[in-house]
Amino acid sequence: MWILPLVGYLGSIVGFGFMTLAIASGLYYLSELVEEHTVVAKRFLSKLIYSIMVLQLLLCIVDRFPFFLTLLGIFSHFIYLGNMRRFPFVKLTDPLFLASCALVLINHYVWFKHFSHRQERAYQNYSYYETPDVPSFTEIASYFGLCVWLVPFALFVSLSASDNVLPTMGNEPSSSSSSSGHGSSGSSGNGKKGLAKALVDSVRSAIAEVSSVTGLKKPEDRL
Image (tube, rainbow, N blue to C red; front, side, top):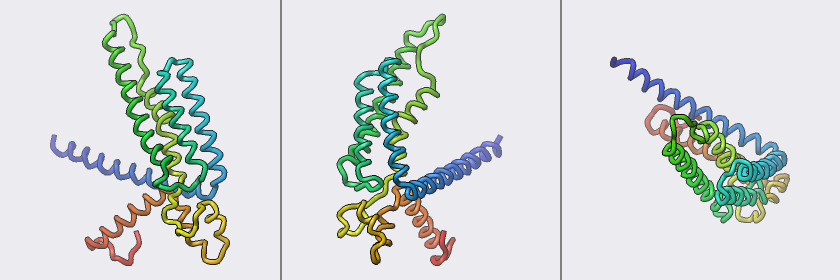
């Protein structure tokens, strides 16, 4: 067969493109939703962080998860909670924000290594008459999704980059409240632009520039 494999590759590319567009649209919608309901989003994220910390503690006590790895996970979520002090604004050079980014990668690595070694040890001692006591793929994926990636992903969607706020505005929350002042509404809107929304907008503008350069779209047309 020659044509069918090509059709399969083409379908995979098209499906990946649609999936990417769906994720980008979802991020854009969630970012706008958080901008409209900041207080509710802050309350929800704070309760979510505390709930995951309790869940990790229960997994350590009941299911015998490693103590030090659980302690690392709880400490990481405590650092994530520190980003809520100026929610929804975040300074990209803030030590807490940089520590949060590093802890996401560290948690992913150590837990992936833990589950890999656990499966390897279980299958080495595997007997035909015994079922290996290892977590299933669904359980591992659910743990990573809920206890490792959920809070950082939610913070990424919810937080707003404040680096583009005017230097005269020292306090980010006060800049948003002063939007009723003369001429400050535009700068406050820039300060409240979500990270995910800014990322999607930058990708859209880059695609528009490439299209205008290659002649696929006129410069005055909008994407």
